[in-house]
Image (cartoon, rainbow, N blue to C red):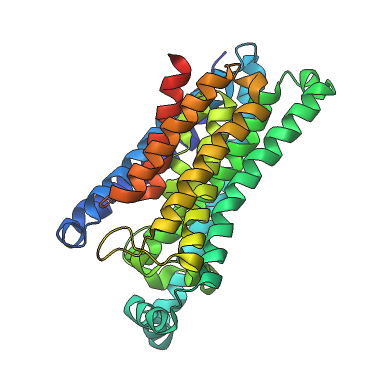
Length: 347
């Protein structure tokens, strides 16, 4: 029997984030429109709504034989973790509000304008700092591939069947719990940073040392990046894995090659180079081929279709890289390349 109380807390958290993000964006729409951030933040809000709506179907979509009892346990465990996480954040923010308002010195030190000024004075746009940012994004891929491999190993050993699970339900349960937990953590911090900076604990402020200057007055790129993967949890695993690796790996290669070897700029007044552009496109093409061949048992298509999927993904990646303006490529890359591959797979 389906019991909504098990999945409802998680769905409510993400729908709540949709509402809070939307309110923040609309409240500051003049500033956001002026700085070309309005469309991007509306899309981010929409992705939270999508996450809340789709969450109840993620674990069981590829596992039609999953028992309702097993599904309820997966929902319960995930929701419990998220409620504890939200509770810890709530207590932390309340505590920091109290100590800040009681001490004018602390309140002055926790002024966001001061933080931005210090950040800009210490900002370094070099290869080393870019590597650190890209490694954080690549960690997302590590989580996906590690848990998928763990799930397939346990399934082959017959362990998961004893729990009424299979590799899809178990692996996606772990991936979603870690991924959503990350999103919940950073969106709390981002909304606090952008609205009531003094409520943010000092240890959380260290997270923002490596963000880009363009993210100072908007949400960091990692959160929408993870949210953009959600629709592809319903696609075959190789498509989901390709989307994640393209968005993190191909983007990292394009950026790092561009910074290290780029000498010819793609467009006037653009930091993107032709060298990085070509490297990103080639990496995208190879990622789709490599992942589709390695994980072909979960895709089961011929090599010709794999090549076609690779070409479509590469074309869309390059189009985003060349023309994306008001919506982040961390959102457009996964959505366009993912749906492009998925459509070709279904034809």
